[in-house]
Length: 113
Length: 111
Image (cartoon, rainbow over all chains, first blue to last red; front, side):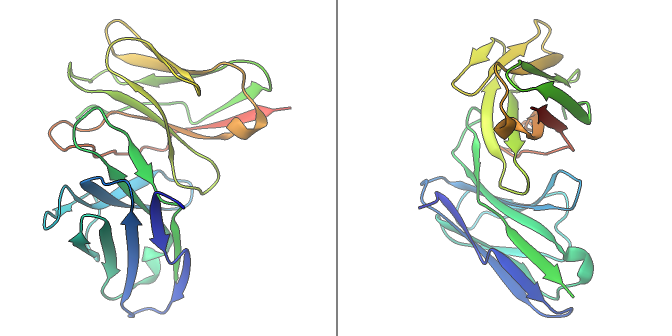
């Protein structure tokens, strides 16, 4: 089983719909992150959380919200999806400290039509 | 914030060493250099990281210049499966392990 699991893996939704992407981890890490990737571009940070009930905005948080329900779970919501939110979304986790690497899920491909 | 500069693309012959450069001239003394790669559209995969000294693991070697303003990731014997986008990252200070990804270097290993 993967250490970082994202669901769903693929989703097509309509403009204006609310959608939630879920991430769960078995690494026991405190820190979790949501990124989006557009074609030909690197990953951009949406939100991150250093612990349960700790939420921080990243580079591109507008139009998104998150919930850290437990140490192992971090959800990303699009309250009213729009077509330019069509992208590949990645969840990641890391341990505390500066000298630790991040572990990524396999991604969720979201298409807003 | 330390930013990184990488060439957009490189080719390497299969079996040869792939040397991927990264410039991070504004790096501060306590910031690490991390390397990740992304194969096709999979989740990025950690390769190696370092602070001052050169590092080696089963995947690669990391050479950091003495002034820490640049580094090179070395894949000693590139295979076709090493074809990927390679990201050099310096996480921002005081923000835990926030990784800000640029566009990286697209490495193509040629048979």
